[in-house]
Length: 225
Ligand SMILES: Nc1ncnc2c1ncn2[C@@H]1O[C@H](COP(=O)(O)OP(=O)(O)O)[C@@H](O)[C@H]1O
Ligand SMILES: [Mg+2]
Image 1 (spheres, rainbow, N blue to C red):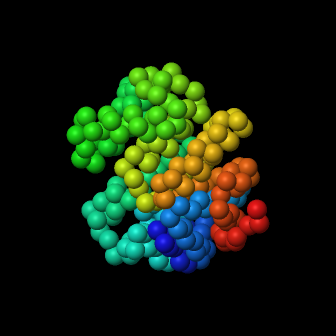
Image 2 (spheres, rainbow, N blue to C red):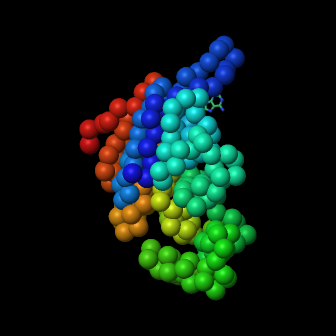
């Protein structure tokens, strides 16, 4: 089990009191498994992903990632765990506009300690796998929205994370680019064996997921496919 969260609760102080966004949410993900968190806009999907990704702390509940009790880690150990174990994909690709597609993949590899030539070779191999080799020297603005999100998925994967968290990765894509992205995610997760959690309000995304969970009024339930 790469991630195990039990009874996670989280709320926000708001003008007229407190907004309880997550109530006793439990969720787990195994390696090679895609879990979709579905539910309408505002139901708390991003709040949950931020907690699971250790970007935010829950009010209560336990979170184990890669067998480590996250609540026991200080900020330094937590950011090390995050950098080494978790990849993130967002609704907006957040690729660096001044750098080429290849360089956008090389940067996280070099930040993780790879030499330039090695980072170059690894990045080319990943781009080859998704048939993006012809886009290597393009800037993000010069490729399609679907291609940008595919590169964003690769960027999350280049350092071989055990867990990837994706928040509405198809939210900005048309139907066909969204389906292409989901197929790519399915193939990569199966090949790489990482756990993958995807938050979305798009019911089609559930089709490639191994399990679907539905978040409503702060409570999570498993949903029928
Ligand atoms: N930092 C915050 N302070 C106060 N309320 C917040 C904060 N972040 C999110 N919320 C509220 O929490 C609820 C869930 O938000 P969010 O997790 O972004 O939902 P989703 O990703 O499903 O659209 C919403 O009502 C939102 O307005
Ligand atoms: Mg959201």
